[in-house]
Amino acid sequence: MQVYALGINHHTAPLDIRAQVAFDPARLVTALHDLLRRQPVEEAAILSTCNRTELYCTTDEPQAAADWLAEYHALPVRKIEPYLYRHPHRDAVRHMFRVASGLDSMVLGEPQILGQMKQAARIAQEAGTLGTLLNKLFQRTFAVAKEVRSTTAIGANIVSLAAAAVHLAERIFERLADQQVLFIGAGEMIELAAAHFAGQRPKRLSIANRTPERARPIAERFGGDVLRLDEVSTKLAEYDIVVSCTASTLPIIGLGMVERALKARKHRPMVMVDLAVPRDIEAEVGRLDDVFLYTLDDLAQIVESGQESRQAAIVEAEAIIAHRVDDFLHWLEARETVPTIRALRDAGERARRHELEHALKMLQRGVDPKEVLEALSKGLTNKLLHPPTQALNLAEGPERHEVAALIARIWHLHPEK
Image (cartoon, rainbow, N blue to C red; front, side, top):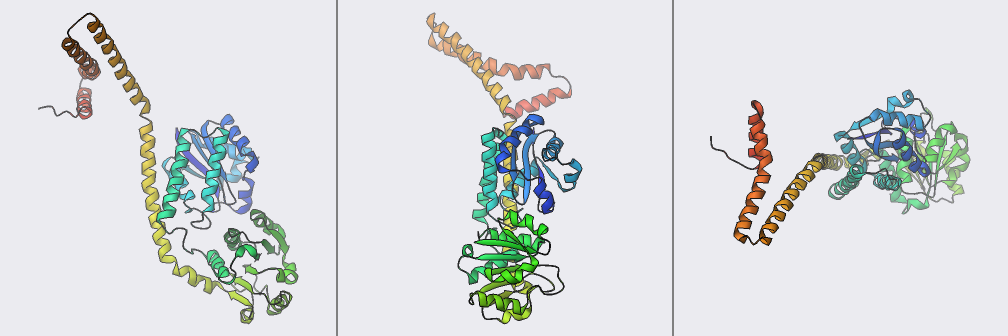
């Protein structure tokens, strides 16, 4: 039975596709029961977050899990097939270690994913779908994530423009949790920026876009609300932080609009981040006393300063993961020999009891204890050596040399030539 991981994430699928295969947390137990009942899957757990939906399972038919995922969400398989990734066995173990360590996240090194994976394991445990193998894999996964976070700087560096925007905002506002944040646009950069700011749990988070329908999925992900683009001018004063990134060829926010907003705010400071090329915010806005305007160039300088430490952290993290993958697979391979070891010990125990009973009867008949001990030791020796001796005697041709070599290896023999 092999371990498999399959699913979609922000690397492989757009937001609307990810939304279609997401699981309702309240129905995860039911979903897990449905998977095991209808497919040749022995153990399973489901991780479903804003950025990914993944199935971890033990099965010899991984396609069955993919078929179930599509069927459960009433989707044709062909609709999600282009976005699906499949990781068999070693790759599955490595993938889980990387995900838990934050190496596969939209925000590199973010810690939330580890808690989400622990929740997925708890739900599978409650559902009774987490067996010995997956349970051990999850425990190793959590241990690896802890090792990566405690021995590398993977979560300590500013590694994206969006993270740099949060860093700059924190210079102005002591607590982002007290601030209201407005994002203008609905593209990938805004989605990434919203993910970073949402991690700070701001007081309010809004997405403004020319087409509100495009902004709504992002807003729903982070518990925000949606504005039409033409509402920004009248509501700008409500926001302490503004992040804009649209494809507009002309500025979205002009000097006059910001001056009116500052007057309404009684000149409380505003942080404005312009991630667009060409600019969404007029350059003159940066000259206002109560506005802290940052552009792509400003953010790039911060990101560049963390490049070297970031690369070192990633290399260190990947090395740890590679080593721990080997450790887990070694445990998995050793686990396959457990039945044989158990059977061998049972055979040895039966031989011991038989010879012990025989020795006790001899003692009861008054036989000299020295003679009894001699018989006991010879009897045990003969019984333990009989199977390998018989195997060697019955072997013929090349097989005899193979059996002889194996016996010599097991018993650490050095037969004379």
